[in-house]
Image 1 (cartoon, rainbow, N blue to C red):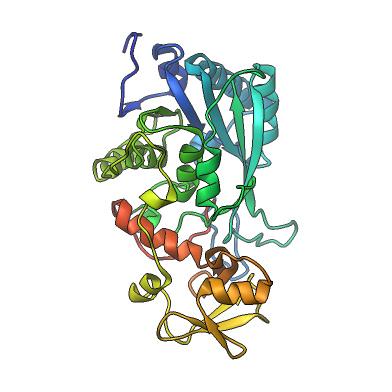
Image 2 (cartoon, rainbow, N blue to C red):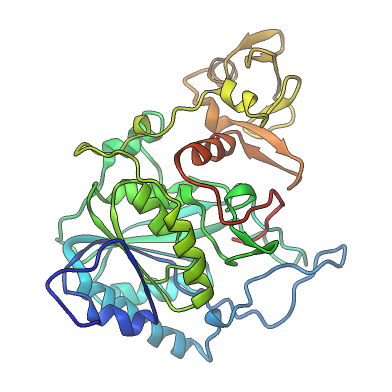
Length: 375
């Protein structure tokens, strides 16, 4: 493909991003989300205490011969992305402690100006089975503009609305991609590091407007494109693995865009989910305990009408939360339920996200409600 005055829109470009990025027109992209190889340096297999093998990230695309080799690769794709980014555009990069500090240093060396480092706090992380370190329960996103004085898009009020009227913080509590959202082929994960749509939804809604062009140079299973298409943004994905290309193409064909006006997408434009709908969908039941702030000592019981009963007091998830908190409370964020499959406490908002996803997007190519330990 040769360079032109206009970028291709809404398409997946198969191939290596280092070869394809230079063929795209300069200053044509509004937002870039990059989920590059983390260079995890896994030198041995991981096993659980019950002697079952952990499905860790051991793909060839994540292996580099040295830190110098990884740094050179990072510098090349970031430089190419910088050329494509509009002067008022921004770039997001996600990573772990294995690579994000190296990526951040190179970002700054290339002239980018970091706006935030955002923590994606996983409510259901993979445990450290060897018990030799803390559980890795978060990943880091770096959000950067092209230069210190560059203008950029940040939909502050929209993020505040999504966050229940409160200023959104830089710690995002979102479950890892699991259950029905996790794409599987023949019972196996289609991609080892598939990111949850809720994470990309927040990235795209916060830093772009309807009609903007979003680029993902490491497209994988197509999460960025699926969310961008659903939210009324144009998108370009680059992916070199033919198997991932097939998964992403099939996934994107099934996504139906929402009707998006010139006004920003807000929580109000997404399917409204009430607590009673969670019960109607069979995700929670009468008699099930919920735990305020995941504290087993602060348990309330779900009543048949969807209200909670706590120490003789009955009310909605928000009312009982306000009673315990002694002030305003968004019950979706503060009440936790016990997920039997993963044997952990998860916020009930994860169930709302799951139900909203089923109403606003499309089913995966092949899915199974099985516990997932990948990041």
